[in-house]
Length: 170
Ligand SMILES: [Zn+2]
Image 1 (cartoon, helix red, strand yellow):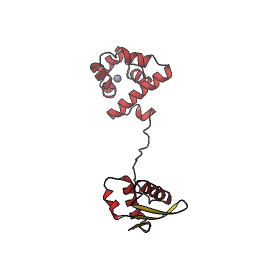
Image 2: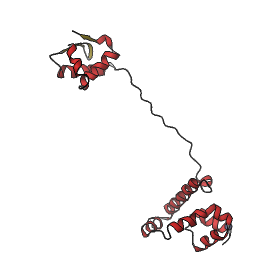
Image 3: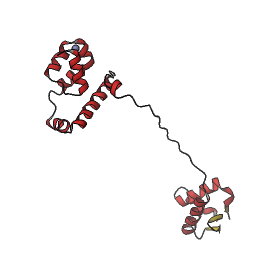
Image 4: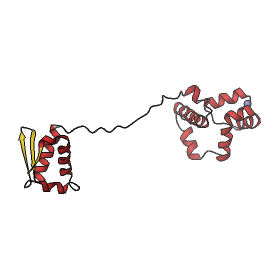
């Protein structure tokens, strides 16, 4: 086998046969470029029946794609890039950053908080409304003792910080 025949065989995605392994063993240039095939052969002398079935059992188009993709990822992992550089240009690097934005409470959230406060703390809290807008929350100071335990009071605490004009203690 000649160098160019081996290269063509590898780029076609055909499994390396005995002739290919023989050439790789005897040609330093090809060993540099395709030596991982021999290494893999030594680590896994024969592909398992399941793998053979999975790869060879597929329609030709997908077979070629999957073998080419495996070859590309091996090449990229080794830094060789002989297939990756040609057939699989690297996608642009995308950085994803997560940003947490806490927006101020709007009227609807204050309204829902007021309804929850009324249903849970009806003897200790009074609320005034104008239509669907809560205009005032009047609370006994004692309810703040529940702050560490009660999500409804935690919401009221948010209202106190973000809409301080709405909350009064009596
Ligand atoms: Zn060669």
